[in-house]
Image (cartoon, rainbow, N blue to C red; front, side):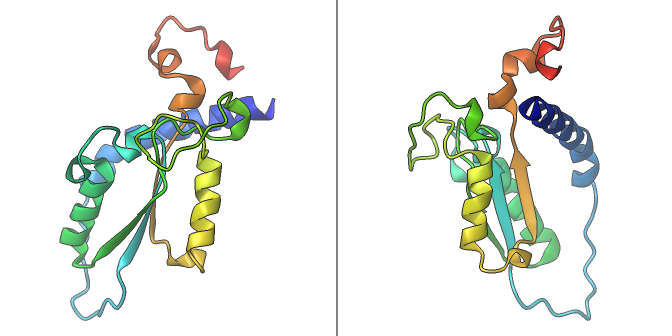
Length: 158
């Protein structure tokens, strides 16, 4: 039951991000000229192949475009930490194959997105150091076929 609730919440979060993205991308960032910026912004990337950018060169991945846009519009250096990898699922209970790989191109469920969060928390000595988090998930949990099938009765959401 808890897993289905998590799936519902992740589905709605995914839909919200899809709807909000065009609005956010169209906004301009204004910087006060009298303010000095001391440290770079830290960008944390969590999720599955969508944010990892399966098969793409680094300069063509979505998180890289966000990084370049932020650097251009804020005048600050952006330091990214990539935890995302292809095949990632939200929690381990939905994984049948317990194998792991250090190569993010390998399509495996582990480490899960929850594991990625734990790893990021261990990496950053203070969680307030993280300025921006990009997250993508649930496609491997729900199955893209279910999301794109208009004839689907929604049984997976009950």
